[in-house]
Length: 228
Length: 407
Image (cartoon, rainbow over all chains, first blue to last red; front, top):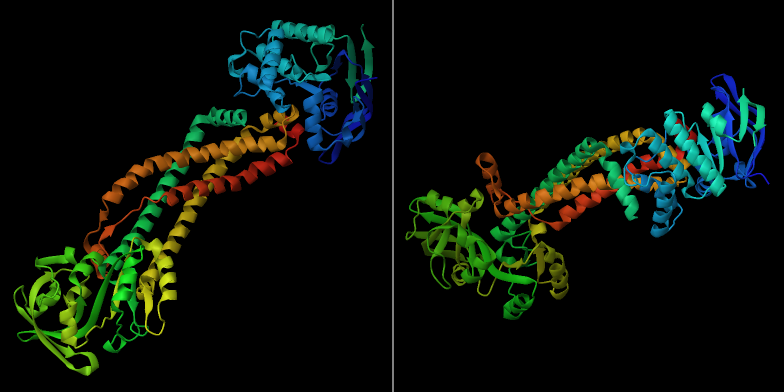
């Protein structure tokens, strides 16, 4: 069974009098353990697709089912809880909480889940070690490089053991070395822990690493290439 | 809770200058409000103390008709048992029986209207500050023939200590009252009205002079403080025979002062409301800026699973911290300042001092160190914070994650 099912998904922005069709009838599904990239030119609808799949935005029509749950049927409060327990997010601009250390940023998710302190600490240390930040656990984001911040963001996304991780242009603000490093970490986590990753990206390095590449243009799936 | 508090506290110091400026506005507002409250209540208390210690006492036992028509037909004869019962009431610190009436006071060719007050010298000095007003001569002794006379009345009649004063008037049942009284002392009351009219003598001599044996016009009642007045009034109103006695409180005897305090308190409340509004808008401005600056961050927190109510709670904690930094520092700074002025009331000079003296008040600005004033400040800031918390509450509940993430 697919972990993510997308059926006839449309999204129309009513920008003034001219409606903009960001998504134009998308049909897709993602299986558990996939390492997939959604690519396409700017304005093609990649980010919109990820936002709707992540329960951050509403569709105009169609259906998104995550692990058998139709997101349209969840209230705003239920969606927040659903995201907390099922989805990990990696944002282009890292979006770490600036007043918290790397460790606290990762623990934050577990705290929201009500996990006890020992468990939080253990999991955060394990994840930060996995992303190669065992020496920088107690640094605040302002003291970390862009690549390091994005690695903390990946650790945070994985903290709650989500069913899948949505990463919106995760390498867009990183240099090539940091990008390679981050992709290696995510690929390793995907293989070792069987975590599903779905990226939206322009970055050819991400495309090269991905085992599945979905190309979107004008809000429609143009191609869906499975490399494995 | 601890984690969220730490989170809120760290958020506060992301913009150190803004937090300090906002806390400073609360700090100065609190100091000002506390000082104003302490001075207001202190002045009222000082004025009430002045009035009660000056002449009326906290209450007076009188004939029910005496206050309306102050004649010797409306006297009381409470007897030792009633007076002893009053003295045995633990809430009553002192009592002083009085016999008061009017007479003509003469010396050489000068004659003035005077208010004659017969007192028990030992009891009266415990009740009023008469001893402290004595400027010349000696205080009265029980059973002595001498009198104490107001300074201005003495000057108007050309009297000095040792001179003899002639009193003439009407006594009980219209009998002629006349007597010669040596001046034993001159008392300088702050109130010119009293200074121009008052003559004190031993109560037994006064009874002889007015042919009013055993009679009293009032028994002055002193209490530990104002708080005791209502319970004492309740007790004694029930115990006393309403045909013979009434217990008049200083509030009934000094209605102008009560009105003045009430009016002043009301104007003080309006002033404080304006002050609190300024504080409120100061904090609100900070919260609005804080919310606008952190819109994206709030969106991220909701995106990763933080419930809206928790976000509101964190912002509320931040506001509480700002408020309480200002309140606590304001209270800590104002305590020693107020404590200093409690011991060293601010003396008034010139016209202000004269005006107060006319009312019978001491020419000082008193302050009180009342914990209630400090508690009120903390409560008001808490209420202000709750009111302001409506803004982040509404903002966060109306916020869409996707819009906030795009901010």
